[in-house]
Length: 227
Ligand code: C5P
Image (cartoon, rainbow, N blue to C red):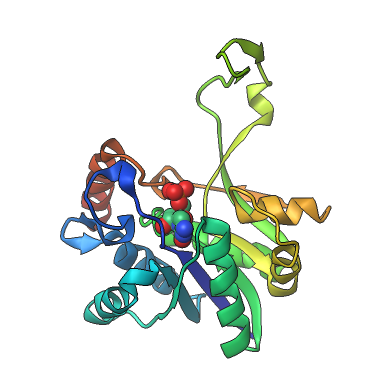
């Protein structure tokens, strides 16, 4: 029985302003994608990695991973994140028929500690059908209307910030993707099936690198991790 990690890395990453796909943006000299794939393999519980790359950059992505000594399969991504994950999932289930646990991990969360990856896999192996790493909210959150006028203030104690990797029993994720629906995270699709999603503690280092500010934080995180 295999644990397979799918890495959607096909976004354009324009908010970073580097003029290249976000997955290729270097942090301390190594592409975000290589950091993310290395983290998954270093966790020791992931047997295969399938990366969804920008279709125009398939060869470059394969070369980047090979140069970093990282064994991973590369498939062409789709028009949005959900499509990219769907394509990677289809490939994984075709070529790795004994897939039991599937992780979905954003390339942009390249510095997720191995302890978080291990906790997600362990929870699925223990019987959970869907598991997500979460953090408590530090900020108060408001729901606003189209004009920006506040409608309500949800109770912060009930809210969580969601990270990746999100972990699933393979059959559950396949069922969720058969819905042909869309969501901003994979657990959102599983919720639409009425299946319970459980949580494990996330980590601040599993932040998503989206803006130049995040990139500066990532440089500092990596410096701390490398000692
Ligand atoms: O745009 P955002 O930061 O939310 O994207 C989250 C992840 O989904 C990123 O790792 C990005 O590369 C990936 N993605 C993808 N295919 C797309 C769009 C985004 O794999 N078409």
